Length: 218
Image 1: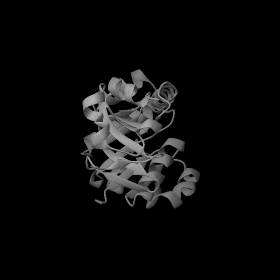
Image 2: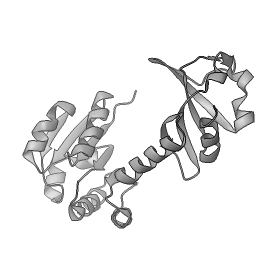
Image 3: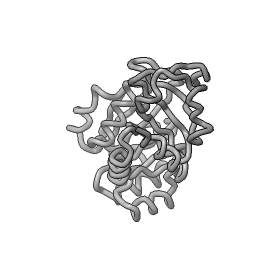
Image 4: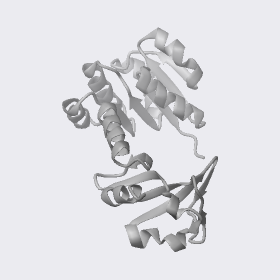
């Protein structure tokens, strides 16, 4: 696994959850916040943590922010600081900047000042909950585009103890199985002869509508 360097600016619940997950995955993570107490609380979940004001160019330069592979701006409710931070990061030459947006207008401004990827946590969580209510067998998903997703789907009982070849999922449902999650194991690029067992999760890729139909099979 390639180890990359990440900086998380803003160590509230959202920023800390990202930092913790990246750190658990063995990545180099720098946590940055203007609040000293938050920095101290996050020290166990990051490689390094510093108190700094991300709206000050000197502070970002002294950290060596341009050397990071990716910077996530997870600043809470201060839109002005969020926007100014993203603008400074791009001016300093940071290659990839991901920014949390509080709403559509905030996201539009972040995009204009150079953010490479905008995250809408509340909207995305709302969509995730709604999708799981509409498709009970769909446990998790990654949105690739407006039309395509990767989804983790619990197989219906009638598909158990059959091979992928027998099920012929691609031809029947126009979606593809790219992995099988079985207890603590994961089978990547399963062969057509791979048998699906009860309790297995299929990691599927395809059009959102086709995936929705597949995840609603009883």
